[in-house]
Length: 223
Image (cartoon, rainbow, N blue to C red):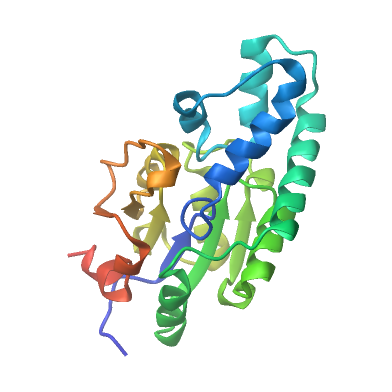
């Protein structure tokens, strides 16, 4: 056991932290939008990272004046993402499973707070065979405000029974880091090259590889 007085829980984001999903989501999004002669380039897509599908589609529908319903497009996106995951081999980001095992072995509570729909989250955790590590899973569907609002992190901490000040969040997006810090939590920012040029400078620690996310780092962040 590693000596620790402050760290009680680690809360993971999903997309870009556990699964390198942003390139998948971007591809699926543009496949859907082909029928409407709209292409979302990298720079614009990067602004959506860390937000919910509902927020993403509302912005796209408004900007491009599309006669579509947000709910319908969210369901279509979920369906197409499912198909991609089922038909392609996708693995967790290197280092994630080792960190989960380290945290579990040292009795650190583990939560997941993702803007993704719950069905999508559960499918990915099942495919990766890591669902049992997470005591609490909270999706963007269960909160009224998407990241960068701190609501999803505060709800996760409450369900875990832990004070926000005793939580470390692992995030890869500007919206996620902003949400974590607004929740008064410590934050490790993962500079994932596939998540675009995200400004994660507000994070307490920044890493460029998930193998650098260790229990020791999570504890040292409080010093």
